[in-house]
Image (cartoon, rainbow, N blue to C red; front, side, top):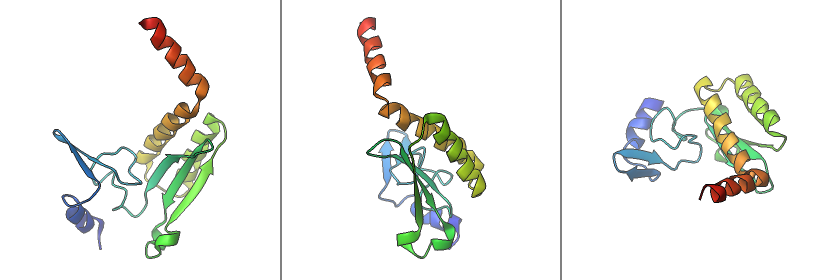
Length: 136
């Protein structure tokens, strides 16, 4: 089934849709921006990118492989990245470029990884909390 037909079915009838005022958001697993649109959808495109934080530090990069679309168990490849920040960003760009993923989503994936790695840095959070106390 083509992507356009799949999107026309899922556009209005999906359990992941969240309505907030005028805007529609999505809670799909591989949706980087959480926007409910065909461009950022995590289930319709043949190749998708997902980034999640790992419990022991670092992030997990999840890639959907189009050749394994009929085998749900092996459809996703998960790569754990737990180096320093710059190495993680560089490796995300390198992996996505090598596997010919959509270039528009590369920078979005790097930004999402930046958010997760910043939240895992305890020193940054302490510094942020000190600033808030001083401003009061």
